[in-house]
Length: 417
Image 1: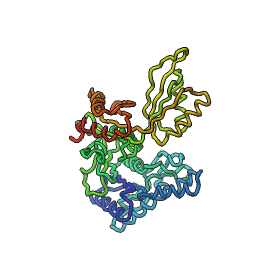
Image 2: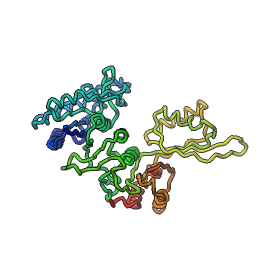
Image 3: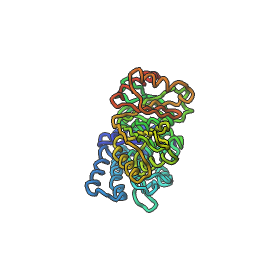
């Protein structure tokens, strides 16, 4: 019997009515002849509530107990969905992470998968059940302690099960009906894509698109798990949503597939850094230790200062705006210790990152020139540029972000299939 993995996010199981709706979608797939593994998130808002309870009890909490508490939200959803399916006459049972078992590392709150043995669930299917409802976001260590995978971990759980059980497909049900060329709330002409390549989806997810969690796309690309993103609030069939798949399944790719953006970015510049071997490591090592997520990095041409034989340069990088204070402290501590010297630290917290993504960029010249010309025509100044094989990102003033997204969407004709 073919097997399908279905994942329902928090908004899709936010209350009993929505859980009943999810059960009907599972029923439709069992009627098509599938055995189904359902991965569920906690009901919308419950994880935040549980985290609040932890933080209200202990500021310096034990991460093992944190995981035991916050993972309970998924357990409730799994049990409720299994009960609803049983009421509909469908053989189903719920599974917590330790029952599968979902074996993970012992990095509590940021655990990674070690293995997902098939035996227990396969035995349950062989015994007559058609549906296994698995609590997402959680696992168990070798020592038997509950772990969690980090926020958004249920997406990753779903992909991992699809890989482990060699599922025909992994359907991710959410509150949107697919992957769009950009956010429809900013560009009304944004188009839902029928298919998108793993690499493109990975870039879009890492650049700010919220449809799929980045780790889940990485895992899907590694194991060639075909993902489908679709709405839990609409009637669907096997052609609904957006299929995230291997590049070879896409007959003809547009040069640019989508425009992504990250609104809350900051830019930091170290002025007159001594240019010597190891200076980049001296700057970015302490930032990494402080858990600062550095993205775009630009180093200026070296130059001499009058009366000084040393070479100096400026170093600019981008980072999330909520990590600026941590970055400042790490750099100031590094300068105080003598590990790095700089004349001034300049911070701009009013920037945004806008990116164009497309596998077609590999074989098409002139994409950067077209992008920069379009922004220039709107008098949008570019502060920092980075590129990869299938991506071009620019850092601009935040007040121009929506205009930039709209302009680039029009420039590359993304409303047309």
